[in-house]
Length: 438
Image (cartoon, rainbow, N blue to C red; front, top):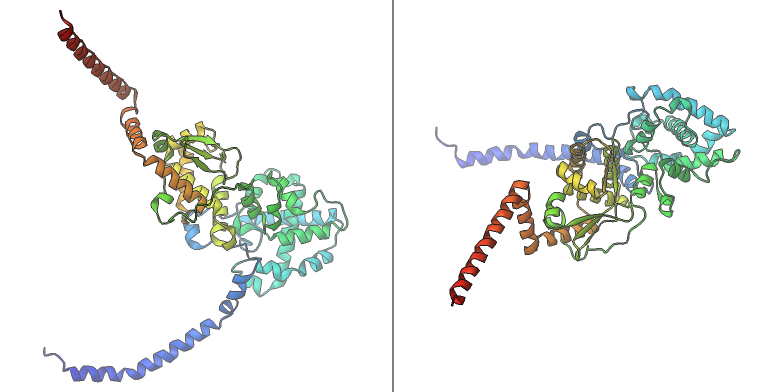
């Protein structure tokens, strides 16, 4: 078939000019409508809110850890409200709300009026609220009152009907999607304190007692219970050298280090830090000692750490200190042998079963830690790698790995050394016998 003349091709393009112009107008109109939608117009105000701190877990994170962010017993706040497996606790929440109201000599109207004064601030605390709540603020207000009074009543005195599930409720209270604004708890506590003497001066001290965490000045600025727990992991504050000006964080040596067994073979020792702050990590270059805080690992560790890490990922002002520590530990722990090394130095207190299960836990935590290290942990990684890369330490590591892995290799090496010594002695004896012979 003969090719079409170029002139006809140009004519065909000219015929489409009108269609393209219509398409441009149509797409422009559609984009203008999208940009004028309430979600986009309110986006800047939502992002600038100082109160925004409770987030819906993104889909890509729930896919990696499907059950880690979902409450098992009780829903608190709007994100999990109405889920079928949590419905049995709704009656218990109403009972505890009634008990709290009666104990504090309150009437429903005074509670509603008091909490309604902070309704806008409470709604600003949540990210991506569904229309069910934004279109009916009264329903949201009711939810806040019932759930807030339930939480305070539970913290003040756990009722007998909930004693058996209290550990599960405690775990659910440390989920990011299940947080209630501290502003709500403080308002309800203030209203209740007008008529009766409450056990603590403010709800934050009540939370500290309940979580068995130290009370400190940092807690004053926390926006919810999960953030308080996060700060407790970093207490007391540790002032370590800042390596940020010296380090290229894209350098692999600032991000990855060998597992504990390999470091041990390279001559690095592990010691338990004097505090339990996750920031109390440092490397003594002179003595080759890596200092680490003691960490209790139990059945709740995975879920709690993942929710703290999710908060650090989603909240701009949260930092990434806990995430950096988790990345460090996931680098150090590759299998059960690494767990045994750290447990032997009292750095890991393993309550999840055997060492293999603990190693799997840190592997799963590391798979969700898609965030770079902060300057402090990056500096620790850098110094540890520099120590391992020294020629003498590399030779020692190779020697240990190749010749000290089993008793038979040790016996063979000792036999070879002994035979070599015998040969040297024989040579010396023959030399002396030849030259000193009369």
